[in-house]
Amino acid sequence: MSRIFFIDTAIPAEENRVKKSDEVDAKLLSMIPRNHFKQLTLRELNLLRLIGEYERYVKWRKTVQQWMRICPDPFKECARRLRSLAEHHGRKIIKEIKNDENYATIYRLACDMIGVKDSVEVAILVARLPLNWKLRRLKGLLGLAPYKDNNCYNHKLREYLSRLAVNLYLNSKRFNKTELLKEVINNNKGLRTLEIKILRVLKKSWQQRRYMLAGGQ
Image 1 (cartoon, rainbow, N blue to C red):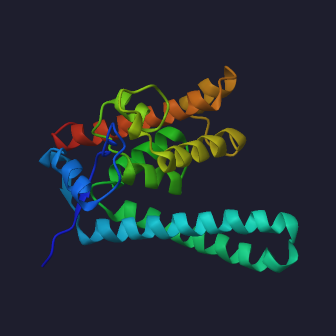
Image 2 (cartoon, rainbow, N blue to C red; image 1 turned 135 degrees about the vertical axis):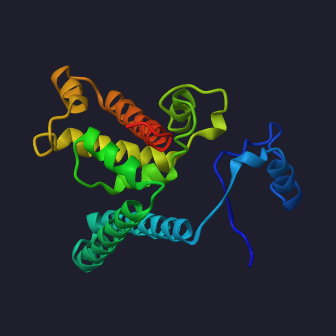
Image 3 (tube, rainbow, N blue to C red; image 1 turned 45 degrees about the horizontal axis):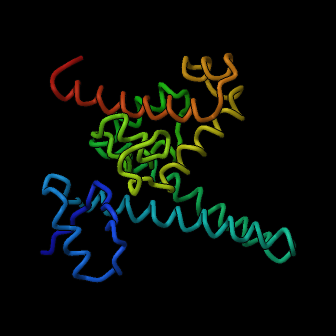
């Protein structure tokens, strides 16, 4: 049976920006240490498939909403259906995360500290972020701080983080007033500060899970 591997690091672009080819790809892959390759389980493959489908439905809905500005009536049902599909896949992603022993504890801890019951953005960030990285490198990955590897910036993951921060900020009255939210709202701090604090919560949740696995309480 064939094996499928996931690369948990960014592949740097060539300095001379050579044309993409199989030979160039092979050279770039050979530069990545073996410990950056992770063999995927069937559950992890299914989770990545769900995330891919969720992202596709969200993207299509945004496109349809732009069309609706010009001619709204023909696309109302399409937008409604795409929203329903995205929400359905979001619930399935959360369910998969909760049932996965590698992610369930991190997700639960993160949601508790952020002050939400469930969140597809938190679930995807838990599954996709390399939380074993140092915090500074994670900030570079999300464009929250300068980092020496400028090709590391992941726009999709930053979009999930930003969406979560905006949702928390705009709907703060509905959520539990955790210390994270209180500090940002009471001191009139911006969304970027909230994004950084959410990232620290995710990193802390990962660290706490490691501590529990090591025998801590």
